[in-house]
Length: 130
Image (cartoon, rainbow, N blue to C red; front, side, top):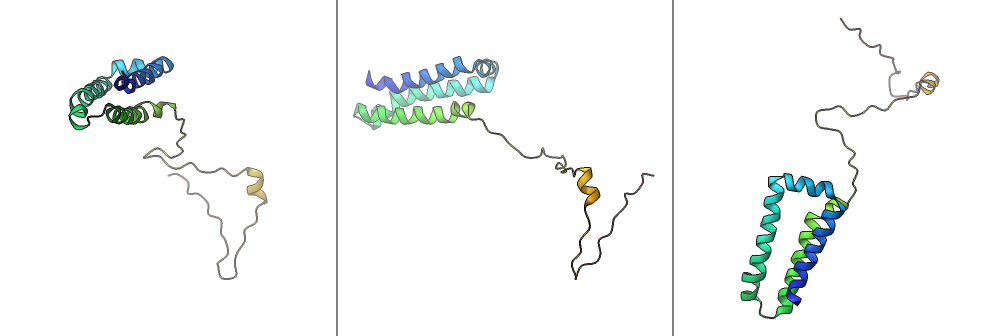
């Protein structure tokens, strides 16, 4: 029974995820890639628990510890990213960076400054379209 605890815990984590995030569950059912990943996790779990670990590690508590670590890694890689809110602030490739707008009142009252070594500031007029 102790050896089944990591599998039960992983099933509970995925069960809670599918109840809490039904839209993601629906998209996983419709996605071939997601079904393949879920199937690979399930098959890998059974192979690890029933074939590999009993031959490598004799004590059941060591097998349970390895399966608990595997369950934690799977949960961190698959489930946790859906609960992290991250805001990405970067420009989309191929678009220009946004230009900060200067309020008209501050633009009208600003006076150009020059340094002793620099030439005087000039105002460029935009070219008219032909």
